Image (tube, rainbow, N blue to C red; front, side):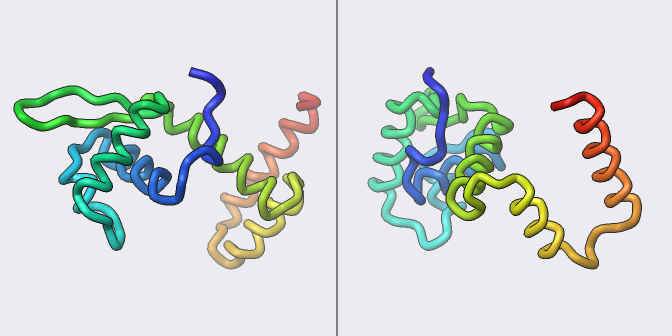
Length: 129
């Protein structure tokens, strides 16, 4: 499969992917039950088939139903989503993104959290990454 991008997925397809990542695998009915304001059964089945055709999920038959699982690793999807977030909201600026996250999480980060983040930054600085 070529390089995965969440940008190529519709909002509903991303919602389905989120469900599959959370559950590990799901049938059409299980996916439908987990969706917020779900469309009809046929629409969910069609979206799952389309995701299968795109190569981001696969299916297997279990009894009379199909069960779908993600093909794209969650980490790969996470990186794709982050790249999309950076491009869409932060003009590809990691600094702006991190600053915004720190502002949103203000008061929720412990001194230990901040020390770990400082350590990661220092490690990246010394490694030249």
